[in-house]
Image (cartoon, rainbow, N blue to C red; front, side, top):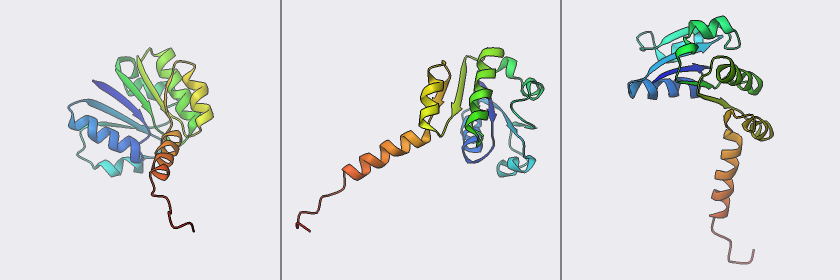
Length: 140
């Protein structure tokens, strides 16, 4: 599988490591060239410095032949727009955007773009954890 990842922070870099370990081809895009240092010079992926909103940068990343695109920058709007561009303009069949704002995540999921909302997932996990806490039975 050929995967383009926009954003090389904690999530993007760990995704890239896992995908490469599984034998997939990965290209990472980030505006900060220093972001790639986390993976090391010998990491077997292509690094592109630039904005994933830039169509020329996306083309350099090989978006036209990508099997999947994941937008995991630190900006909801950037992720949403990048995922829309990948899906609609470059016809990437699997285009995913990380969206922190649960309301935006729902709104854009309705457009057909797959969204992952860590805020919503963390809330559900925290609620489950709180509900599983033992209750104080001493009446205090």
